[in-house]
Length: 215
Image (cartoon, rainbow, N blue to C red):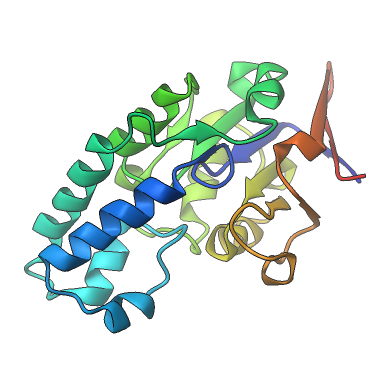
């Protein structure tokens, strides 16, 4: 499938990098520290959502700010050796002009930058949890990224691995490419579904970007 665009927007965890083992390890420790039962923790959607929203689902409002700071510290301290670039990430980003792509993540900026730096990715534009008031699946994160790049949302292609992120991108009026790195294909509502970024190539022209995804 070919998609013509002016900018590409990437989720981070599960799309560009994998930090699943670190995420599971840190959140399990966090839940124990705050006395959250396995049953209560299991009912909350963890992947692709801001930590503040997850904490708010599980804890009293007055505890949330402290709890969010704690999970951020745990995850930042666990970055070294726990984050790897997913297949195709480095090769694809190397093809793109810096002003034509952005990272749009539900992580805080501090955590996102730590994970990206661990694998040598340094985006010119990043939208993180600190920059928004409503996280995915709300369209705000992706609309902000398009505005920062100066691109019409309809001319953006979003790469995501999580249902919440794909819903955010669709609500923003953007085309979507889903990666099956963390969810089954049947859970992902997108224009095209691929295994990972190794199944994606981009041709840069004077008129924009031509994205080829899948076989």
